Length: 600
Image 1 (cartoon, rainbow, N blue to C red):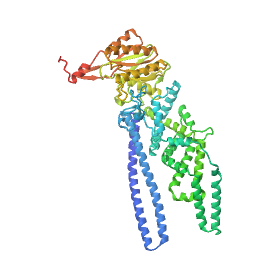
Image 2 (image 1 turned 30 degrees about the vertical axis):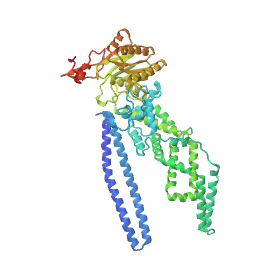
Image 3 (image 1 turned 45 degrees about the horizontal axis):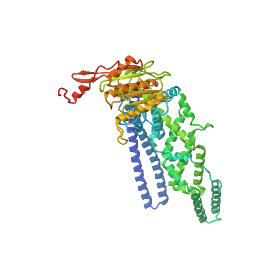
Image 4 (image 1 turned 90 degrees about the vertical axis):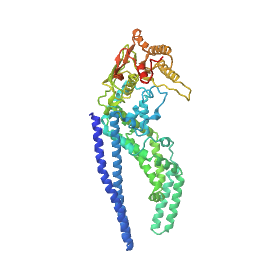
């Protein structure tokens, strides 16, 4: 059993036991709450019947206090139980990654699918049974966006950037308990993927402290305090205080006319702010050794070495006050006495002036840590995978390379494309593994560029822009046939190569929508053109005549997959071999479908 599998299973057992113990405590506390309510009712009734008003009030106060304490601990235990359930789910997801059974996860990242992307659709980066579905453990909008940008290779990193990411991901892989806490804190508060653009718009808005805020609140507070003293001294009647309170309430409403919208805004995002504060606190409190993680953490501090955590906690306290102001009676008394809403609004404006332009940066850094943590799941879960060597040469070479998402069933192959060899031509019969192998190479290249370990014993690659043409389909809305859709993707690939991009292409059964003569000629011309523009790649084909290019073009290298038969049943070993294919199975498969070749 692997280290990761053993870890996840032991954690699940541990948290299941904790939940069993908590269930007993929660049941006892529920019963105790009911007993307290019954005793409070009986006690109140008893003292009411005996007209003992003082004892009646004391009993109500006492039982209320006891009930609040018990309810606090009861809710705390329920919260603990929720956290343990989240931990169980996180560790179950880890087991699913290892065993390749992650397909049932609900979050597939389908909103990031773009047909026009150079490789995402063909390599299963998003959607069902995708790389995103496999590794994603982000819970915030910022984390999801950062992870999608990483997997989309929005920008091609250089060698130094990749090595820094490798170091960071390797470190985060070992911090598995810290990563799980990060995930739990964001899950419990349910910040999720909610759009917080309106909160960011407020933060980036113009902050302006009105001159009236600097004078008027203090003036009315002074009048209120003097009035209270005069009433206590019986200089003024008590009704005067009520009049002062009414005037104060009117002044607060005039000065804070915009507060209602702000209360609605922060009430909507209260849990988001709390979750973000918790996540940033976890990041700030953790010690990192890798260069990239240190750099990210340092960006959470101002030039005065002040942590964003302190600022986010200050915002959270203000938001909590806003919540109180809209729902609590005691706050109304505070408001008409010291005009507290005016100070909250002033403090919010001051917070915005100091931090409004920084909050999005803080949250993006938080998201980047979430994204890196998601990728580091691979580092911890698959300890036999290896970090690739990033070469300055045009090379793709792997020993025992497997498809990263197949799990324990992955068949591994060794492969080399370097020096004079620029194109690997993959031939073989139907279902023998050609398309899967193309995706295997493409996915391991992507993992290399995002700093992750690869599904291999060793993997070496240069830095390329990945382009694929594998799953072309009709688009009825735009009246595009599958053949023309394929032509459009090839056009994008050619333009990229002509524009100087260092292209690595993966072409699966190119030009399959036309006749064999045009297909052969088109494929031959295309491959020549791509190589002239310094591109490298793999081409799978049933056109065995293309293999003859190896005789005249030293940059072509032939590989093949084969099938074999047992008791008239077709079998595959999915092993890559050098040379051209010598077997075909199309006729056999047609016969299995019931086509009788003896009939003329």
